[in-house]
Image (tube, rainbow, N blue to C red):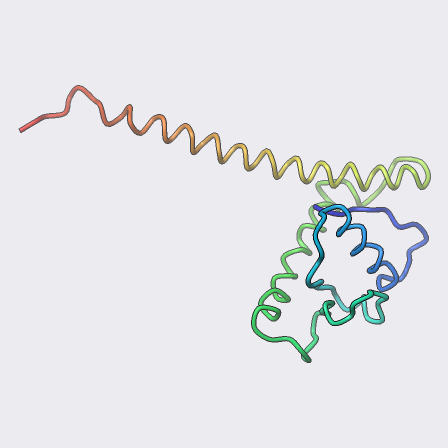
Length: 144
């Protein structure tokens, strides 16, 4: 999860796109080449519209862009997991600062779960690498 922010008063999706792109570019330090969004972002206010692709769009979509646009659907389950596992469905913290804190803490928790899964996989790899040579040196091996 790279960018998470609470937006009070339920703004139109398209009016938030420029701010999200600018903040993400500032956070990462590199320019965003392409943004893939859903149909709620029609009429967006992005500075460079040719690099924003809306799902279901046919014009200008081919090759790598078409493949990446299909990949966008893999993001929706992550948002669903944040709502259920990250407890974003209902916020019990008071006011707008509580809403903002709830979103940030949920994103941090998601990233922390991803880091722990990566460390778990790395630890398993290290253990299998260390155990494999020990099993090759069994004293019952016969030499002919």
